[in-house]
Length: 116
Image (cartoon, rainbow, N blue to C red; front, side):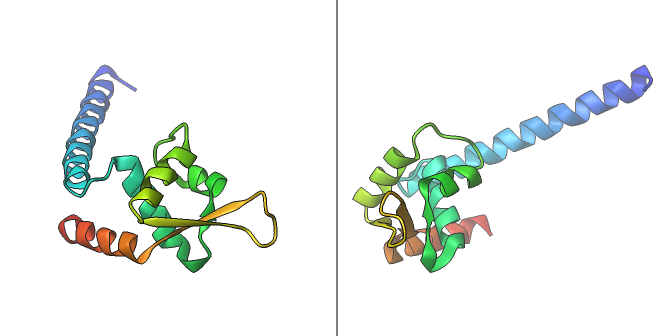
């Protein structure tokens, strides 16, 4: 790759990084207006996609856009707001399944409008 091509690639990368940051800031502001952090929104989005069966903490963690150190605490906060529910698995009592609640679904619908 010659110097001109390298420079062009670097500038393109910088522009993409700036645009990504602008989008993340705008989305974070929207989530904050609804009392959510970006990771909390991400968990709700993941659980909505999981449907009625829900997911366990490990499955949620695997699907997160950005890794968070403690999914359990994140779920605690969402459960306290009644945005998710948790229940022990019937097949394996060590596993706790999380599901989005109707209230969580409604909150996501409100957030979806400006994002569309």
